[in-house]
Structures are given as structure tokens and as C-alpha cells.
Amino acid sequence: MSRQDEIAQKAVRKSTLKSLKSKKRSRLKQLKIDYENAVQQINIQYAEDPERLKAKYAAAEYAKTERAMKRAEKRIANEKRLLELAKKSRRLTVGEEIGSSIVQGIGVMLFIAATAILDTIAVGQLDSFVNITTVFYSLFGASMILMYLSSVLQHALTNITAKQVFNRLSHVFSFLIIGFGYSAYTITKIQGEIGWILFGIVWGLVFIGILFYSIAGEKYDKLNVALYILAGFSGLFVAKNLFEVLSAKSFSMLVLGAVFYLIGIIFYNLKKIKFMHLLSNIIMLFGSVYIFFSLFFLGA
Image (tube, rainbow, N blue to C red; front, side, top):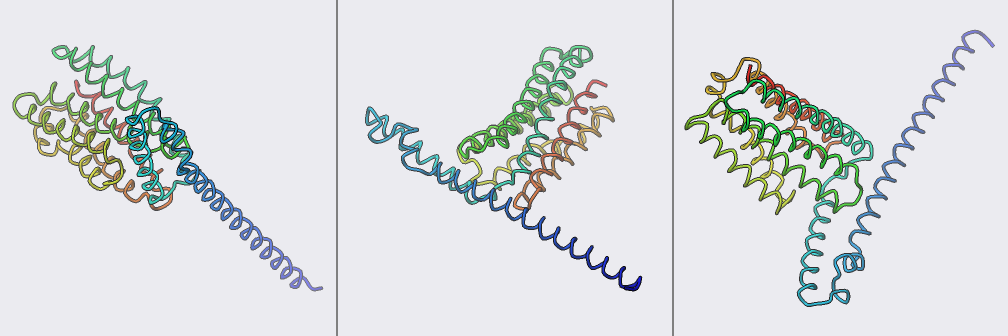
């Protein structure tokens, strides 16, 4: 056998091994997808089981009174609606769920520290608004912590109903973050008639968003996102005032935070594509960090 024949055979062996390894990876990937789909179907079938729903909510023969039975039937109907929404949306893969849990867990730890830092800054720098600023900073930080914690639980738990509940909670706290964040700017910096108008507009949108999402959930997802954007970007109407009253660092960090949140929302709406939801979580975490630094430099 010539040298060229040996080289050719070696190349064929390498090509064959590479092809087989590729087929192996492809097959394992497909098995993983099939497994995740099977788990999803089992969870849905379990959640939809009429006997489970009756036993859970003490319906029919389990109910002691007619009033209790009607209340149970209402809860069962609500859970069925949640299950229908869950079936229509793309189920995140195990990797996406784990990745999102890690990212949101980092958010919890960061904002535990950030809240303490903001309260210290409020006491040390904003002398004329120490009490009110400390309150808003504390509420802003607490909302951030609870939002990220709810999101961690949403991604970590497998029960469909539990995931829906914590998903709603995370969105409710997201609206509160907007409200308390803007309150810090309007009360301590903008002030006056314009400040109170912005304060009223933001909190009006926040309350509408919370009420709507608490009732409808993801049923009208696009409308929820629109309310979120309207509340979050209300500051555009007073951008000139913000530029004049905020320090350069605080204003630039606020702008960067808004940009990251907007990009995050765009990726969030592409969540039907694999890993887009995880990417949106990462981008929005950066947005949260920039908002923190904007508040950090608020008294500069």
C-alpha cells in the first residue's frame, strides 16, 4: 500500500468517525427533545385530570356546601384556562429554564446588596428628602428582589399552575419597579407640577398594568407589553427636565438602562425562538444594573 493510499484511508476513517459522532449528537439531541416533550405532556395530562382538579379544590362529592362547590368549579375553570395558555405557548427547554433560573438568581443576590447601598446613599447625600427617598429606594429594591425571586421560582418549578402564578407575580413586581423607580426621580429631582403629573401618569399605568395582568395573565400578552412600555418610557415626555436636573452620570445610566430594557423586551417577544427568552433575561438584568447606577448617582 502506497503512502497516498494510507493517507486516503486515514481520511476516510476520520470522515466516517466524524459522521458517526455527528449522527450520535443529533440522535441524543432528538432524544432529549422527545424526553422534554414527553415530560410536558405528562405534566399537562396530570394537571388536566378531572379527578385531580376535583380533589384539589374539593369539588362535587368532596364539597360540603353548594357555595363551596361553586367556588371550586370557578377555580377549576380558571386552572383549565391557565392550562390552555400553557399548551399554546412554546415550552422552554430544560437548558433555558436552568439558564434563566441562574440569571434571575444572580439578580436576587445583586439587588439584595444594591438595596442596602441605595439606602446608605439616601441617608448620606439627599438630606432634604432622606425619609421619602429611603422609603422609595427600599421599595424599589424590594420589588427588584421579589421580581427576580418570583422569576427564579417560575423557571425552577415544573408544575404548570405554579409557573403561571409566579409568572404573574414577576410581572406585577416589574410594574412596581417602574413606579417606585420613577417616584425617586419625581419626588427628589423633578418636583413641581411636572413631577407630580409624571408621578400620576406612571402610577396610573402601573395600577392598570397590575390589575390587567393579575386578571388576564398572558391572554393578552401584547397589550401587557404595551402597558409595560408606556409606563417604563413615560419619562420621555420630561426627558429635557430629567437632563437638566440629573447629573450627567445619572442621566446617562438611566438612558442606558432604558435602552437595555427596550432591547430585552424585543427579545422577550421573540421567545418562540429557542434561547431568546434566556437572552432577554440577561439583557434586562444589565438594564436593571444601569437603573441602579442611575439612582446611585442621583445625588451626585
